Amino acid sequence: MYKLFLCFIFLFTTFVCNAQFSDSTNYYVNYTSTGSLNTTNDNRSYLLNNAVKLNIRKKGMSLNFNNNWVYGQQDRELTNNDFSSSLDFNLYKNASHFFYWGLTNYNTSKSLKVNNQLLAGAGVAYSIYDRENAYLNLSNGILFDSSDLIVDDAPDVYHTYRNSLRVTFKFIIRKVIILNSSTYYQVSLKQGDDYIFKTNNSLSLKLNKWLSFTTAYNFNRVSRTDRQNSLLSYGLTFERYF
Image (cartoon, rainbow, N blue to C red; front, side, top):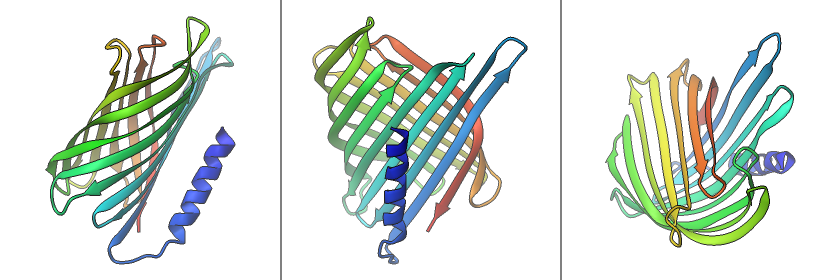
């Protein structure tokens, strides 16, 4: 899976770098590497959280490719080997704050007992506030969920449709401090107690135009497996617009 992830990044980056550039096309690359390490006389634990984001935006549409890999051990026992990859697009209507979106998302997670999960669907979104230094967006849609989980130490393969509600915001303070947050609540249309909840948050301090010091907090819960994880880490973010 890790080799597949690297191949995806290589191919997509190659595509971006060789695309036909124009004044109306913008490209954005973001790589964040955070982690934590704890060692004592008796114990040793560490956590690595790596994320790659690629974005292409033209007038009227944008394409986003996001990848995240969390790996951790405690006393040489594997605690996290969690991978997520998503490809989504937004279609904008004139200068309106209203737009349509589509999404395909693949997940696998040791900590959440998710062997494989594929989510795909579409919906609508509205930017309540959209300025250069402040952004607040609310979106909703329907996703098809095809999952292979482990429930009570037994395989659980099933399909369901989910309502996906998302709240996203970004604030930039004095062009130096950047606060990002995305929170998702994805509940099954068949069963109300079958839901996925996740929130990804980061606070970055810009060191220069392309490098920031970042503290990240991520929380994930899958009610069907009755598993959750909470990750607090810190590190560096590299970003480039071109």
